[in-house]
Length: 558
Image (tube, rainbow, N blue to C red; front, side):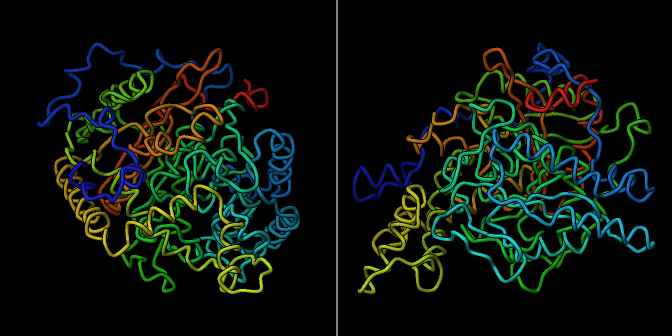
Protein backbone atom coordinates (compact mmCIF):
# COMPACT_ATOMS: atom_id res chain seq x y z
CA UNK A 1 0.00 0.00 0.00
CA UNK A 2 2.78 2.45 0.83
CA UNK A 3 4.40 1.56 -2.48
CA UNK A 4 1.18 1.91 -4.43
CA UNK A 5 0.50 5.42 -3.21
CA UNK A 6 3.97 6.72 -2.48
CA UNK A 7 3.85 9.46 -5.10
CA UNK A 8 0.78 11.37 -3.96
CA UNK A 9 1.02 15.11 -4.39
CA UNK A 10 -0.27 16.05 -0.95
CA UNK A 11 -1.35 14.43 2.28
CA UNK A 12 -5.01 15.24 1.58
CA UNK A 13 -4.93 13.72 -1.88
CA UNK A 14 -3.01 10.74 -0.58
CA UNK A 15 -5.70 10.12 2.04
CA UNK A 16 -8.47 10.35 -0.55
CA UNK A 17 -6.87 8.13 -3.13
CA UNK A 18 -5.67 5.40 -0.83
CA UNK A 19 -9.29 5.09 0.29
CA UNK A 20 -8.48 2.79 3.17
CA UNK A 21 -5.02 1.90 4.39
CA UNK A 22 -6.17 0.06 7.47
CA UNK A 23 -4.05 -3.02 8.15
CA UNK A 24 -6.13 -4.17 11.09
CA UNK A 25 -8.59 -5.70 8.64
CA UNK A 26 -5.87 -7.35 6.69
CA UNK A 27 -3.50 -9.26 8.94
CA UNK A 28 -1.98 -12.21 7.18
CA UNK A 29 -2.57 -15.05 9.58
CA UNK A 30 -1.30 -18.04 7.66
CA UNK A 31 1.00 -18.64 4.70
CA UNK A 32 0.20 -22.31 4.26
CA UNK A 33 -3.03 -24.18 3.72
CA UNK A 34 -3.94 -26.23 6.77
CA UNK A 35 -6.97 -28.10 8.13
CA UNK A 36 -9.53 -25.60 9.35
CA UNK A 37 -11.58 -27.78 11.63
CA UNK A 38 -8.56 -28.65 13.78
CA UNK A 39 -8.12 -25.02 14.63
CA UNK A 40 -11.75 -24.28 15.39
CA UNK A 41 -13.10 -27.58 16.66
CA UNK A 42 -13.97 -25.93 19.97
CA UNK A 43 -16.81 -24.00 18.32
CA UNK A 44 -20.29 -25.50 18.18
CA UNK A 45 -21.11 -27.79 15.32
CA UNK A 46 -24.28 -25.86 14.68
CA UNK A 47 -24.77 -22.18 14.01
CA UNK A 48 -28.06 -22.32 15.89
CA UNK A 49 -26.29 -21.80 19.20
CA UNK A 50 -25.03 -18.36 18.15
CA UNK A 51 -28.25 -17.26 16.47
CA UNK A 52 -31.15 -15.32 17.88
CA UNK A 53 -34.02 -16.89 15.98
CA UNK A 54 -37.28 -15.03 15.48
CA UNK A 55 -40.44 -16.68 16.75
CA UNK A 56 -41.76 -17.52 13.31
CA UNK A 57 -41.98 -20.60 11.17
CA UNK A 58 -38.60 -22.31 10.80
CA UNK A 59 -39.54 -24.18 7.64
CA UNK A 60 -36.74 -24.37 5.10
CA UNK A 61 -36.55 -21.78 2.30
CA UNK A 62 -38.57 -22.80 -0.71
CA UNK A 63 -38.66 -21.40 -4.20
CA UNK A 64 -41.39 -18.79 -4.43
CA UNK A 65 -41.01 -18.80 -8.20
CA UNK A 66 -41.70 -22.53 -8.45
CA UNK A 67 -44.60 -22.19 -6.01
CA UNK A 68 -46.20 -19.45 -8.11
CA UNK A 69 -45.69 -21.38 -11.34
CA UNK A 70 -47.23 -24.52 -9.92
CA UNK A 71 -50.21 -22.68 -8.44
CA UNK A 72 -51.17 -20.61 -11.47
CA UNK A 73 -50.68 -23.42 -13.99
CA UNK A 74 -52.82 -25.78 -11.89
CA UNK A 75 -55.33 -22.93 -11.46
CA UNK A 76 -55.11 -23.38 -7.70
CA UNK A 77 -54.47 -19.63 -7.49
CA UNK A 78 -54.45 -16.89 -10.10
CA UNK A 79 -51.61 -14.58 -11.05
CA UNK A 80 -53.81 -11.67 -9.97
CA UNK A 81 -54.20 -13.15 -6.48
CA UNK A 82 -50.44 -13.45 -6.11
CA UNK A 83 -49.97 -9.91 -7.40
CA UNK A 84 -52.54 -8.53 -4.97
CA UNK A 85 -50.87 -10.37 -2.08
CA UNK A 86 -47.48 -8.78 -2.77
CA UNK A 87 -48.92 -5.35 -3.57
CA UNK A 88 -50.88 -5.32 -0.31
CA UNK A 89 -47.73 -6.15 1.63
CA UNK A 90 -45.84 -3.49 -0.30
CA UNK A 91 -48.45 -0.83 0.60
CA UNK A 92 -48.24 -1.76 4.28
CA UNK A 93 -44.45 -1.88 4.54
CA UNK A 94 -43.28 0.74 2.05
CA UNK A 95 -43.95 3.79 4.28
CA UNK A 96 -41.47 2.25 6.76
CA UNK A 97 -38.89 0.63 4.47
CA UNK A 98 -38.90 2.98 1.44
CA UNK A 99 -37.48 0.41 -0.95
CA UNK A 100 -39.05 1.81 -4.10
CA UNK A 101 -38.59 5.00 -6.07
CA UNK A 102 -41.38 4.04 -8.47
CA UNK A 103 -44.13 1.41 -8.36
CA UNK A 104 -45.74 0.28 -11.61
CA UNK A 105 -49.43 1.01 -12.11
CA UNK A 106 -49.89 -1.88 -14.55
CA UNK A 107 -49.07 -4.84 -12.29
CA UNK A 108 -52.67 -6.10 -11.94
CA UNK A 109 -53.38 -5.63 -15.65
CA UNK A 110 -50.31 -7.70 -16.53
CA UNK A 111 -51.35 -10.37 -14.02
CA UNK A 112 -54.83 -10.49 -15.59
CA UNK A 113 -53.28 -10.98 -19.03
CA UNK A 114 -51.28 -13.95 -17.72
CA UNK A 115 -54.47 -15.49 -16.32
CA UNK A 116 -56.18 -15.05 -19.68
CA UNK A 117 -53.29 -16.75 -21.47
CA UNK A 118 -53.51 -19.68 -19.05
CA UNK A 119 -57.24 -19.93 -19.70
CA UNK A 120 -56.44 -20.10 -23.43
CA UNK A 121 -53.78 -22.77 -22.75
CA UNK A 122 -51.05 -20.51 -24.13
CA UNK A 123 -47.42 -20.61 -23.05
CA UNK A 124 -46.82 -18.03 -20.32
CA UNK A 125 -43.09 -18.43 -19.69
CA UNK A 126 -41.05 -19.70 -16.73
CA UNK A 127 -41.47 -16.46 -14.75
CA UNK A 128 -45.19 -15.95 -15.32
CA UNK A 129 -46.80 -14.16 -12.40
CA UNK A 130 -43.47 -13.48 -10.66
CA UNK A 131 -43.15 -9.92 -9.37
CA UNK A 132 -39.62 -8.63 -9.97
CA UNK A 133 -38.21 -5.37 -8.64
CA UNK A 134 -35.46 -3.68 -10.65
CA UNK A 135 -32.72 -1.42 -9.33
CA UNK A 136 -33.17 2.09 -10.68
CA UNK A 137 -29.85 2.13 -12.54
CA UNK A 138 -31.16 -0.58 -14.90
CA UNK A 139 -33.13 0.89 -17.81
CA UNK A 140 -36.86 0.27 -18.18
CA UNK A 141 -38.78 1.73 -21.12
CA UNK A 142 -42.06 2.20 -19.27
CA UNK A 143 -40.74 3.55 -15.94
CA UNK A 144 -38.27 6.22 -14.78
CA UNK A 145 -34.60 5.25 -14.54
CA UNK A 146 -32.87 7.85 -12.40
CA UNK A 147 -29.86 5.93 -11.02
CA UNK A 148 -30.79 7.61 -7.73
CA UNK A 149 -29.54 10.97 -9.03
CA UNK A 150 -31.17 14.36 -9.49
CA UNK A 151 -29.29 14.77 -12.75
CA UNK A 152 -31.47 12.00 -14.26
CA UNK A 153 -34.69 12.97 -12.47
CA UNK A 154 -37.77 12.05 -14.58
CA UNK A 155 -35.59 10.35 -17.23
CA UNK A 156 -37.45 7.58 -19.07
CA UNK A 157 -35.27 5.48 -21.39
CA UNK A 158 -36.67 4.57 -24.82
CA UNK A 159 -35.58 0.95 -24.32
CA UNK A 160 -35.35 -1.89 -21.82
CA UNK A 161 -32.05 -3.21 -20.58
CA UNK A 162 -31.34 -6.66 -22.00
CA UNK A 163 -31.86 -8.25 -18.57
CA UNK A 164 -35.25 -6.54 -18.21
CA UNK A 165 -36.26 -7.54 -21.73
CA UNK A 166 -35.46 -11.17 -20.99
CA UNK A 167 -37.49 -11.04 -17.77
CA UNK A 168 -40.52 -9.72 -19.63
CA UNK A 169 -40.10 -12.35 -22.34
CA UNK A 170 -40.17 -14.96 -19.56
CA UNK A 171 -43.50 -13.66 -18.28
CA UNK A 172 -42.23 -11.69 -15.27
CA UNK A 173 -44.09 -8.64 -14.01
CA UNK A 174 -41.86 -5.64 -13.22
CA UNK A 175 -43.34 -4.29 -10.00
CA UNK A 176 -41.19 -1.16 -9.79
CA UNK A 177 -37.78 0.50 -9.51
CA UNK A 178 -35.83 0.30 -6.28
CA UNK A 179 -33.76 2.85 -4.40
CA UNK A 180 -29.96 2.94 -4.52
CA UNK A 181 -26.93 5.02 -3.69
CA UNK A 182 -26.51 7.56 -6.48
CA UNK A 183 -25.04 5.86 -9.56
CA UNK A 184 -24.27 2.85 -7.36
CA UNK A 185 -21.65 4.74 -5.36
CA UNK A 186 -22.15 3.84 -1.72
CA UNK A 187 -22.65 1.09 0.81
CA UNK A 188 -25.75 2.19 2.74
CA UNK A 189 -28.36 3.55 0.25
CA UNK A 190 -28.12 6.81 2.18
CA UNK A 191 -26.48 8.30 -0.91
CA UNK A 192 -29.74 8.34 -2.87
CA UNK A 193 -30.86 11.81 -3.95
CA UNK A 194 -34.48 10.91 -3.13
CA UNK A 195 -34.86 8.97 0.12
CA UNK A 196 -33.14 6.73 2.67
CA UNK A 197 -34.12 3.07 2.66
CA UNK A 198 -34.39 1.25 6.00
CA UNK A 199 -33.46 -2.31 6.88
CA UNK A 200 -36.62 -4.46 7.38
CA UNK A 201 -34.90 -6.18 10.32
CA UNK A 202 -34.40 -2.91 12.16
CA UNK A 203 -35.80 0.29 10.70
CA UNK A 204 -33.04 2.30 12.40
CA UNK A 205 -30.35 0.42 10.45
CA UNK A 206 -29.13 0.65 6.88
CA UNK A 207 -30.01 -2.10 4.37
CA UNK A 208 -26.54 -1.93 2.81
CA UNK A 209 -25.75 -0.62 -0.61
CA UNK A 210 -25.71 0.33 -3.23
CA UNK A 211 -28.51 -2.14 -4.04
CA UNK A 212 -30.17 -1.62 -0.66
CA UNK A 213 -33.61 -1.02 -2.11
CA UNK A 214 -33.59 -4.30 -4.04
CA UNK A 215 -32.36 -6.27 -1.01
CA UNK A 216 -34.89 -4.66 1.36
CA UNK A 217 -37.75 -5.28 -1.08
CA UNK A 218 -37.02 -9.03 -1.15
CA UNK A 219 -36.42 -9.17 2.60
CA UNK A 220 -39.78 -7.48 3.31
CA UNK A 221 -41.42 -9.76 0.71
CA UNK A 222 -42.59 -6.76 -1.31
CA UNK A 223 -41.64 -8.71 -4.42
CA UNK A 224 -40.57 -12.26 -5.22
CA UNK A 225 -37.07 -11.51 -6.52
CA UNK A 226 -35.15 -8.45 -7.62
CA UNK A 227 -32.27 -7.27 -9.77
CA UNK A 228 -29.35 -5.27 -8.44
CA UNK A 229 -25.92 -4.30 -9.71
CA UNK A 230 -22.59 -5.24 -8.18
CA UNK A 231 -19.45 -3.17 -8.81
CA UNK A 232 -17.62 -3.88 -5.56
CA UNK A 233 -20.12 -5.81 -3.46
CA UNK A 234 -23.37 -3.91 -4.02
CA UNK A 235 -25.44 -7.09 -4.25
CA UNK A 236 -23.61 -9.22 -1.70
CA UNK A 237 -23.25 -6.80 1.22
CA UNK A 238 -26.97 -5.77 1.20
CA UNK A 239 -27.91 -9.45 0.95
CA UNK A 240 -25.97 -10.08 4.16
CA UNK A 241 -27.45 -7.04 5.93
CA UNK A 242 -31.03 -7.92 4.94
CA UNK A 243 -30.92 -11.71 5.40
CA UNK A 244 -31.55 -12.68 1.77
CA UNK A 245 -29.64 -14.54 -0.94
CA UNK A 246 -27.47 -12.41 -3.22
CA UNK A 247 -25.80 -13.72 -6.38
CA UNK A 248 -23.05 -11.91 -8.28
CA UNK A 249 -22.40 -13.70 -11.58
CA UNK A 250 -19.12 -13.90 -13.44
CA UNK A 251 -18.24 -10.73 -15.35
CA UNK A 252 -19.69 -11.19 -18.85
CA UNK A 253 -22.29 -13.79 -17.81
CA UNK A 254 -25.12 -11.20 -17.91
CA UNK A 255 -25.37 -8.42 -20.48
CA UNK A 256 -24.63 -4.92 -19.16
CA UNK A 257 -26.62 -3.31 -21.98
CA UNK A 258 -29.01 -0.88 -20.30
CA UNK A 259 -27.10 -0.77 -17.00
CA UNK A 260 -26.14 2.81 -16.19
CA UNK A 261 -22.33 2.67 -16.18
CA UNK A 262 -20.33 3.30 -13.03
CA UNK A 263 -17.10 1.32 -13.54
CA UNK A 264 -17.49 -0.62 -16.76
CA UNK A 265 -14.78 -3.21 -16.12
CA UNK A 266 -16.33 -4.10 -12.76
CA UNK A 267 -20.12 -3.63 -13.14
CA UNK A 268 -22.29 -6.76 -13.09
CA UNK A 269 -26.07 -7.20 -12.88
CA UNK A 270 -26.89 -9.55 -9.99
CA UNK A 271 -29.86 -11.29 -8.38
CA UNK A 272 -31.67 -11.27 -5.04
CA UNK A 273 -34.05 -13.95 -3.77
CA UNK A 274 -35.39 -15.36 -0.53
CA UNK A 275 -33.90 -18.74 -1.50
CA UNK A 276 -30.94 -19.95 -3.50
CA UNK A 277 -33.30 -21.56 -5.99
CA UNK A 278 -35.05 -18.27 -6.71
CA UNK A 279 -31.74 -16.43 -7.21
CA UNK A 280 -30.59 -19.21 -9.56
CA UNK A 281 -33.82 -19.26 -11.55
CA UNK A 282 -33.62 -15.49 -11.94
CA UNK A 283 -30.01 -15.72 -13.16
CA UNK A 284 -31.02 -18.44 -15.62
CA UNK A 285 -33.57 -16.06 -17.12
CA UNK A 286 -31.23 -13.12 -17.70
CA UNK A 287 -27.82 -14.61 -18.57
CA UNK A 288 -26.39 -15.43 -21.98
CA UNK A 289 -24.63 -13.70 -24.84
CA UNK A 290 -25.92 -10.36 -26.08
CA UNK A 291 -24.64 -8.76 -29.27
CA UNK A 292 -25.43 -5.35 -27.77
CA UNK A 293 -22.71 -5.82 -25.12
CA UNK A 294 -19.17 -6.39 -26.37
CA UNK A 295 -18.13 -7.78 -22.96
CA UNK A 296 -20.91 -10.38 -22.94
CA UNK A 297 -19.58 -13.93 -22.93
CA UNK A 298 -20.48 -16.44 -25.62
CA UNK A 299 -19.91 -19.32 -23.22
CA UNK A 300 -22.74 -21.84 -23.10
CA UNK A 301 -25.15 -21.47 -20.19
CA UNK A 302 -25.97 -24.67 -18.30
CA UNK A 303 -29.31 -25.42 -16.67
CA UNK A 304 -28.85 -24.03 -13.16
CA UNK A 305 -32.24 -25.31 -12.06
CA UNK A 306 -31.00 -28.91 -12.23
CA UNK A 307 -29.11 -28.23 -8.99
CA UNK A 308 -32.24 -27.56 -6.93
CA UNK A 309 -33.15 -31.09 -5.87
CA UNK A 310 -35.44 -31.94 -2.98
CA UNK A 311 -33.91 -32.41 0.46
CA UNK A 312 -35.37 -35.89 0.90
CA UNK A 313 -33.11 -37.30 -1.83
CA UNK A 314 -29.89 -35.87 -0.35
CA UNK A 315 -27.24 -38.36 0.70
CA UNK A 316 -26.08 -38.36 4.31
CA UNK A 317 -23.12 -36.20 3.25
CA UNK A 318 -24.25 -34.58 -0.02
CA UNK A 319 -21.10 -32.43 -0.31
CA UNK A 320 -18.62 -35.19 0.46
CA UNK A 321 -15.18 -34.41 -0.92
CA UNK A 322 -15.89 -30.80 -1.81
CA UNK A 323 -12.74 -28.77 -1.18
CA UNK A 324 -13.51 -25.54 0.66
CA UNK A 325 -10.90 -22.87 1.36
CA UNK A 326 -11.47 -20.35 4.14
CA UNK A 327 -9.67 -17.08 3.38
CA UNK A 328 -7.69 -16.53 6.57
CA UNK A 329 -7.33 -12.77 6.09
CA UNK A 330 -11.10 -12.34 6.37
CA UNK A 331 -11.47 -13.65 9.94
CA UNK A 332 -8.85 -11.51 11.66
CA UNK A 333 -8.85 -8.20 13.47
CA UNK A 334 -11.43 -5.68 12.40
CA UNK A 335 -14.18 -8.25 11.88
CA UNK A 336 -16.99 -8.34 14.45
CA UNK A 337 -16.57 -11.39 16.67
CA UNK A 338 -20.23 -12.36 16.41
CA UNK A 339 -19.85 -12.33 12.63
CA UNK A 340 -16.79 -14.55 12.95
CA UNK A 341 -18.76 -16.93 15.20
CA UNK A 342 -21.55 -17.18 12.63
CA UNK A 343 -19.06 -17.87 9.84
CA UNK A 344 -17.35 -20.55 11.91
CA UNK A 345 -20.72 -22.11 12.57
CA UNK A 346 -21.36 -22.16 8.82
CA UNK A 347 -17.97 -23.79 8.31
CA UNK A 348 -18.86 -26.48 10.85
CA UNK A 349 -22.11 -27.10 9.00
CA UNK A 350 -20.23 -27.50 5.71
CA UNK A 351 -17.95 -30.05 7.39
CA UNK A 352 -21.01 -31.97 8.57
CA UNK A 353 -22.15 -32.06 4.94
CA UNK A 354 -18.89 -33.73 3.95
CA UNK A 355 -16.73 -30.79 2.85
CA UNK A 356 -12.98 -30.86 3.32
CA UNK A 357 -12.32 -27.45 4.84
CA UNK A 358 -8.83 -25.93 4.91
CA UNK A 359 -7.51 -22.48 5.58
CA UNK A 360 -5.94 -20.58 2.69
CA UNK A 361 -4.02 -17.33 2.70
CA UNK A 362 -4.31 -14.72 -0.04
CA UNK A 363 -1.45 -12.31 0.71
CA UNK A 364 -2.69 -9.89 -1.97
CA UNK A 365 -6.09 -9.59 -0.27
CA UNK A 366 -5.11 -6.37 1.51
CA UNK A 367 -4.24 -4.68 -1.78
CA UNK A 368 -7.67 -5.11 -3.34
CA UNK A 369 -9.53 -2.34 -1.55
CA UNK A 370 -7.30 0.63 -2.45
CA UNK A 371 -6.75 -0.69 -5.97
CA UNK A 372 -10.51 -1.04 -6.40
CA UNK A 373 -11.21 2.54 -5.36
CA UNK A 374 -8.53 3.91 -7.71
CA UNK A 375 -9.89 1.91 -10.66
CA UNK A 376 -13.60 2.41 -9.92
CA UNK A 377 -13.19 6.14 -9.34
CA UNK A 378 -11.11 6.52 -12.48
CA UNK A 379 -13.68 4.74 -14.61
CA UNK A 380 -16.53 6.68 -13.04
CA UNK A 381 -14.88 10.02 -13.79
CA UNK A 382 -14.80 8.99 -17.44
CA UNK A 383 -18.28 7.42 -17.58
CA UNK A 384 -20.01 10.29 -15.80
CA UNK A 385 -18.46 12.97 -18.01
CA UNK A 386 -21.42 12.51 -20.37
CA UNK A 387 -23.80 14.02 -17.80
CA UNK A 388 -23.20 17.67 -18.62
CA UNK A 389 -26.73 18.97 -19.22
CA UNK A 390 -26.21 18.91 -22.99
CA UNK A 391 -25.65 15.30 -24.01
CA UNK A 392 -27.35 13.73 -20.97
CA UNK A 393 -28.83 14.96 -17.75
CA UNK A 394 -31.01 17.80 -16.55
CA UNK A 395 -29.87 21.26 -17.57
CA UNK A 396 -29.79 24.54 -15.70
CA UNK A 397 -30.50 27.88 -17.37
CA UNK A 398 -27.29 29.73 -18.21
CA UNK A 399 -26.03 32.22 -20.79
CA UNK A 400 -22.55 30.69 -20.93
CA UNK A 401 -21.62 27.15 -21.96
CA UNK A 402 -19.03 26.67 -19.22
CA UNK A 403 -21.51 27.82 -16.57
CA UNK A 404 -24.14 25.50 -18.04
CA UNK A 405 -21.80 22.52 -17.78
CA UNK A 406 -20.57 23.36 -14.31
CA UNK A 407 -23.95 24.35 -12.92
CA UNK A 408 -25.76 21.30 -14.30
CA UNK A 409 -23.20 18.92 -12.78
CA UNK A 410 -22.99 20.82 -9.48
CA UNK A 411 -26.77 20.76 -9.04
CA UNK A 412 -27.25 17.24 -10.39
CA UNK A 413 -24.56 15.23 -8.60
CA UNK A 414 -24.50 14.43 -4.89
CA UNK A 415 -21.42 14.69 -2.62
CA UNK A 416 -20.23 11.08 -2.94
CA UNK A 417 -20.42 11.15 -6.74
CA UNK A 418 -18.46 14.42 -6.82
CA UNK A 419 -15.87 12.94 -4.45
CA UNK A 420 -15.29 9.91 -6.65
CA UNK A 421 -15.17 11.96 -9.86
CA UNK A 422 -12.49 14.16 -8.29
CA UNK A 423 -10.52 11.14 -7.05
CA UNK A 424 -10.72 9.47 -10.45
CA UNK A 425 -9.84 12.56 -12.42
CA UNK A 426 -6.78 13.10 -10.23
CA UNK A 427 -5.69 9.46 -10.59
CA UNK A 428 -5.90 9.73 -14.39
CA UNK A 429 -4.10 13.08 -14.62
CA UNK A 430 -0.88 13.24 -16.59
CA UNK A 431 1.48 13.46 -13.65
CA UNK A 432 -0.09 10.70 -11.57
CA UNK A 433 -1.38 8.06 -14.04
CA UNK A 434 1.59 5.73 -13.49
CA UNK A 435 1.56 6.25 -9.73
CA UNK A 436 -2.10 5.37 -9.28
CA UNK A 437 -4.07 3.95 -12.20
CA UNK A 438 -1.25 1.89 -13.71
CA UNK A 439 -0.21 0.47 -10.35
CA UNK A 440 -3.82 -0.32 -9.46
CA UNK A 441 -4.11 -2.31 -12.69
CA UNK A 442 -0.95 -4.18 -11.76
CA UNK A 443 -2.44 -4.99 -8.36
CA UNK A 444 -5.58 -6.21 -10.12
CA UNK A 445 -3.48 -8.72 -12.06
CA UNK A 446 -1.87 -9.92 -8.82
CA UNK A 447 -5.33 -10.36 -7.23
CA UNK A 448 -6.57 -12.34 -10.24
CA UNK A 449 -3.57 -14.66 -10.13
CA UNK A 450 -3.88 -15.25 -6.38
CA UNK A 451 -7.55 -16.22 -6.70
CA UNK A 452 -6.80 -18.52 -9.62
CA UNK A 453 -4.08 -20.27 -7.63
CA UNK A 454 -6.39 -20.70 -4.64
CA UNK A 455 -9.26 -22.00 -6.79
CA UNK A 456 -6.95 -24.47 -8.53
CA UNK A 457 -6.57 -26.11 -5.10
CA UNK A 458 -10.15 -25.60 -3.85
CA UNK A 459 -13.63 -25.91 -5.34
CA UNK A 460 -14.90 -22.81 -3.55
CA UNK A 461 -13.54 -20.15 -1.21
CA UNK A 462 -15.54 -18.67 1.65
CA UNK A 463 -15.43 -15.51 3.75
CA UNK A 464 -17.82 -13.18 5.55
CA UNK A 465 -19.82 -10.94 3.21
CA UNK A 466 -19.10 -7.91 5.41
CA UNK A 467 -17.03 -7.19 8.54
CA UNK A 468 -20.18 -6.46 10.56
CA UNK A 469 -23.93 -6.72 10.53
CA UNK A 470 -26.02 -3.70 9.53
CA UNK A 471 -25.19 -0.51 11.40
CA UNK A 472 -27.29 2.52 12.30
CA UNK A 473 -28.50 4.97 9.67
CA UNK A 474 -26.18 7.97 9.72
CA UNK A 475 -23.41 6.15 11.61
CA UNK A 476 -20.90 6.28 8.75
CA UNK A 477 -22.45 8.82 6.40
CA UNK A 478 -19.89 11.49 7.24
CA UNK A 479 -16.92 9.13 7.35
CA UNK A 480 -16.26 7.95 3.77
CA UNK A 481 -13.13 6.01 4.70
CA UNK A 482 -14.99 3.94 7.29
CA UNK A 483 -17.70 3.24 4.74
CA UNK A 484 -15.13 2.21 2.12
CA UNK A 485 -13.59 -0.20 4.64
CA UNK A 486 -16.85 -2.15 4.72
CA UNK A 487 -16.19 -3.30 1.14
CA UNK A 488 -13.02 -5.18 2.11
CA UNK A 489 -14.69 -8.61 1.82
CA UNK A 490 -16.19 -8.12 -1.62
CA UNK A 491 -14.10 -5.88 -3.91
CA UNK A 492 -11.43 -8.50 -4.68
CA UNK A 493 -14.07 -10.70 -6.31
CA UNK A 494 -14.97 -7.91 -8.74
CA UNK A 495 -11.33 -7.24 -9.52
CA UNK A 496 -10.95 -10.93 -10.39
CA UNK A 497 -14.27 -11.07 -12.30
CA UNK A 498 -15.42 -14.16 -10.38
CA UNK A 499 -18.91 -15.33 -9.34
CA UNK A 500 -19.95 -15.21 -5.69
CA UNK A 501 -23.01 -16.22 -3.70
CA UNK A 502 -24.05 -14.80 -0.34
CA UNK A 503 -26.63 -16.50 1.83
CA UNK A 504 -27.70 -15.96 5.44
CA UNK A 505 -26.08 -18.19 8.03
CA UNK A 506 -26.81 -16.70 11.45
CA UNK A 507 -27.53 -13.64 13.58
CA UNK A 508 -25.78 -11.11 15.79
CA UNK A 509 -27.37 -9.40 18.77
CA UNK A 510 -28.53 -5.83 18.24
CA UNK A 511 -29.92 -4.70 21.56
CA UNK A 512 -33.01 -6.79 22.23
CA UNK A 513 -33.34 -7.82 18.58
CA UNK A 514 -31.08 -9.63 16.12
CA UNK A 515 -29.61 -8.81 12.74
CA UNK A 516 -28.78 -11.37 10.05
CA UNK A 517 -25.29 -12.29 8.91
CA UNK A 518 -24.39 -13.73 5.52
CA UNK A 519 -21.36 -15.65 4.34
CA UNK A 520 -19.83 -15.45 0.89
CA UNK A 521 -18.92 -18.36 -1.37
CA UNK A 522 -16.57 -17.59 -4.26
CA UNK A 523 -16.21 -19.86 -7.27
CA UNK A 524 -14.14 -20.17 -10.41
CA UNK A 525 -15.12 -18.11 -13.43
CA UNK A 526 -18.44 -19.23 -14.97
CA UNK A 527 -18.93 -21.87 -12.28
CA UNK A 528 -22.15 -20.43 -10.86
CA UNK A 529 -23.65 -23.90 -11.13
CA UNK A 530 -21.40 -25.25 -8.38
CA UNK A 531 -22.07 -22.27 -6.10
CA UNK A 532 -25.81 -22.72 -6.51
CA UNK A 533 -25.59 -26.44 -5.77
CA UNK A 534 -23.57 -25.91 -2.59
CA UNK A 535 -25.72 -22.98 -1.50
CA UNK A 536 -28.95 -24.89 -2.06
CA UNK A 537 -27.77 -27.90 -0.05
CA UNK A 538 -26.48 -25.62 2.72
CA UNK A 539 -29.75 -23.73 3.15
CA UNK A 540 -31.93 -26.84 2.85
CA UNK A 541 -30.01 -28.57 5.64
CA UNK A 542 -29.75 -25.53 7.91
CA UNK A 543 -32.59 -26.13 10.31
CA UNK A 544 -33.67 -23.92 13.18
CA UNK A 545 -33.16 -20.48 11.57
CA UNK A 546 -35.84 -18.35 9.97
CA UNK A 547 -34.82 -15.31 8.01
CA UNK A 548 -38.16 -13.49 8.10
CA UNK A 549 -37.75 -9.91 9.39
CA UNK A 550 -39.83 -8.78 12.39
CA UNK A 551 -41.62 -6.25 10.19
CA UNK A 552 -43.64 -9.03 8.57
CA UNK A 553 -43.10 -11.84 11.10
CA UNK A 554 -46.76 -12.00 12.20
CA UNK A 555 -47.81 -12.88 8.65
CA UNK A 556 -45.46 -15.88 8.58
CA UNK A 557 -45.99 -17.32 12.05
CA UNK A 558 -46.75 -21.00 12.41
